[in-house]
Amino acid sequence: MFSSKKDSNGVKMAKLATLIAHNVHISGDLEFSEGLRMDGQVTGNVTGRPGEETLLVISDQGAIRGNVSAYNVIINGCVTGDVTVAHFVELQSNARVMGNIYYQQLRMDIGATIEGKLTKIDSQSAPVPTLPPPPHDYTIDLATN
Image 1 (cartoon, rainbow, N blue to C red):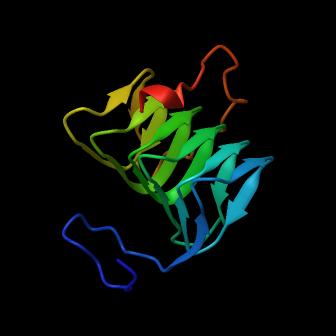
Image 2 (tube, helix red, strand yellow):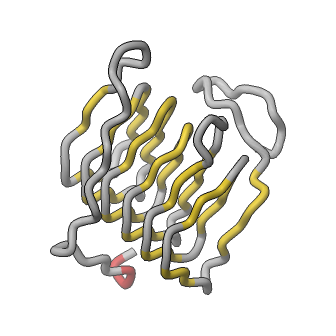
């Protein structure tokens, strides 16, 4: 997973240079480059550096309360907010997304849940939509995880 070769899904696996551990909670917006593995929680927007082929991995312990934007995203935790993915998004079996997902390529495993719309982005003609602030009427219950 730490190499730069492509896997069978067409995701170029970036170097996961940053880890937010399960006992870490960050309040505020976060911008990352290369790769970020999220086992902790962020209250704020999480954005991959524009123009880079970034990879965000949200583990089954990870949670984001805010909008997410990156080149590739793998979700197995909880996101409360809109998700914009320039290339490939994978929703693993424990993924819970409460918001809209804008994507170019999508893979969704059995058990993943979405409370929002899925919108395919045409890579050549459609601009990436501007995301509104995250909704405030959703709650994340990590105890049921």
